[in-house]
Length: 222
Image (cartoon, rainbow, N blue to C red):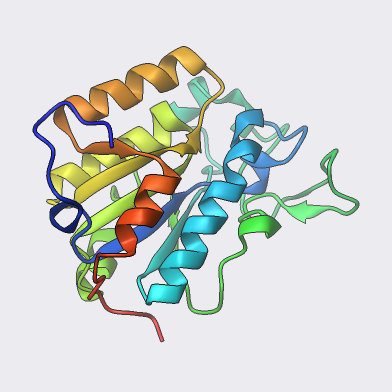
């Protein structure tokens, strides 16, 4: 487990954990998507393994989706694909992708990571998953104290969410092989910086091993 501060035992890092899957939705992950992150598809297997384990031990699995506002706003300056001409991440927009045989709702979580019944989906209109949402309230209601963080894009929505989690008091671990970026240099810098001051950076295999000995204790959604 890679960390710059002094290492802690797993049972002090993964305290009442939840798995948070950030923005693994069609308009980011599918081939030919307006804001495609090709490397996101390489993380699907790792995220799926973590989700299966969390479900098996009765720990929460929580999803987020990025939604674009339909009115002109500051974010459009950096993501012009969200303009009306393309409608990237507009709720209610269906789109065909190169790796599917039918049009899909562009904001839906990809089929490969489809949420199970009653698993919460947090919709957000910005980069961070806590800002302007009820994510903190939800996690606290489930007794969650630590977050395993996966999804896309590493240096944007994942990083912003991880920093917000730190400021809300959650012990947060980013899964290096469970997050993705369109810029490898920015991904590397983000992970290094996060481990320096905000949380931990680990990998799927190490987390799965740690969960064998950690009692989740957090509430479930059943």
